[in-house]
Image (tube, rainbow, N blue to C red):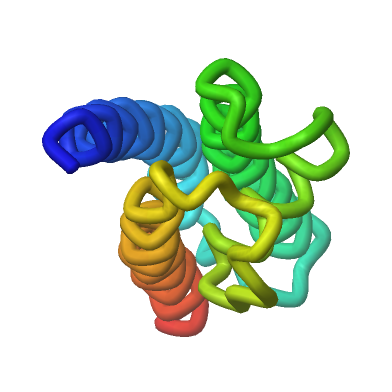
Length: 141
């Protein structure tokens, strides 16, 4: 169990750092929009508002996808699932807390997948807060 917790903690730290860096990069891009918004009042349904919304959506999707793949590669390295397809599928449903089944996961690594589910929900919530803040800022104009 100690090894599972150590591996899980390492993955949580990795994914939180990746997520923080990704959100920072997206916010840096938005600061340019924020400066322009102050001058021109960007409307959410304007071409620039739509472009910003789509860019952030794709950026968030990329970040979550990257984090899912990190867990999938971990599952392959530790040999807890059979094959890349199974690893990506299992990681995706676990990260999103859909949790179809852990029957395909090696029993001695199931705690890692449980913690991935908690980690995924927290990161998805963080992304949701980031996205809602963006939309609220555009709605003010």
